[in-house]
Image 1 (cartoon, rainbow, N blue to C red):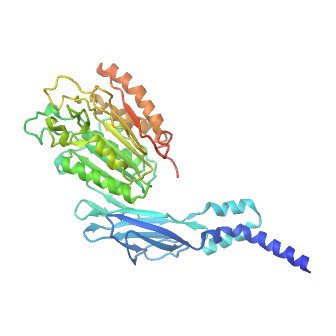
Image 2 (image 1 turned 135 degrees about the vertical axis):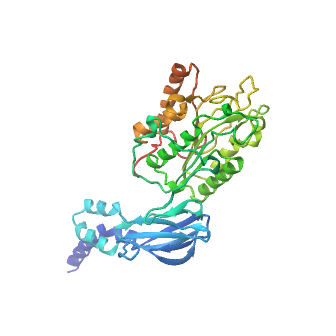
Length: 433
């Protein structure tokens, strides 16, 4: 009798073991919620949690359809006075443990059903970050999506219209992917003469606004960056650029190591003539006062102050004193080879030109030379390319095409941070999670 009891107990254990998904997952899941700025009240499926960000909530893995949500779906809304509410929809996915159990044992079939009945089969996002925008800044809430920006440009560029005149501006493929922890800062500084009375229009950076506008579309459609996660500036002043960089710093901080950041800049770059340190030049800064611009070293420090998965900086600018049309300091007769800051951490930069070279325009394509081929490769591959492969392509095609079309050398400059904890070079820009 005892032997029979042991066999029954053993059989029962075997039958129950495959149902471990419910035991391991439990019927609730922990979710971390934060926002930028913090202090937003959190609503789930239309009901207040009586909590403000940052906070932790526990949600049932199985949820009924309600007035605000579909079955097994959570709608998170973040509300803060003076800011447009942010809505995020999270639909349950089925845990891979369930199918593994079913594969391992035929006895898992009854447990397979139990897991779905109990809710243990389902899982949701563990972390949600909400980016809140101030009211009356051109944002609108779209239910079941995120906040969408419907007007995005700097006041200084209010008369600018992005005319899609190049092959890379049209028929951009869409991956239909969205990575909630991807962020982008995109700047196109073209019109310097309007901000500085002593400059003529030849000083302007032809097509820089086109470059930034096109890259923004690629960021959304190919790189999967939510539009609400993009900071987009045309003809940006010193104050606007500094504010945007500070915002990226805070986003990286609050993403708690999960951020993937893209920084794109088209415009003037200059070295300080004494220290040779390179600077990005806002439209309200004279080339004679480069040190009042955005020091590249300070930008990189801000982007790597807090842990992140990776930071990619793309610069369609040179730092020799040259420019697409004419030097910002017209009197400069010789180019300056700028110094190079040692990059630390999970960061990589790809600049349009090396040494004393100039970042040239591609007039027939209405873009910078660097940006045109960058977008061309992203379009051809739909982003399914490693960062190293992209950099290699740029290094091969731009020098050759530049000599053929411009009779000048232009060699892109790739730099990878030391002591990186993630492999940036072999990272595929766009891939299914």
